[in-house]
Image (cartoon, rainbow, N blue to C red; front, side, top):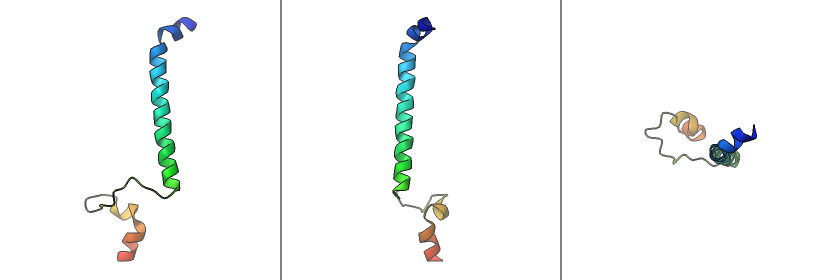
Length: 62
């Protein structure tokens, strides 16, 4: 068991680093979503989700 860990230590370290980065990104996205922030630039002219993303603005136009 320890020999396998020793042989694959670099791979394990890289995997843990990538998993940590993914966790940090997901955590940041969730925190931003709870605060009402978005990565959306607001240019909905060509966005297929224009009616779903900004529902208040779309319903105000109707």
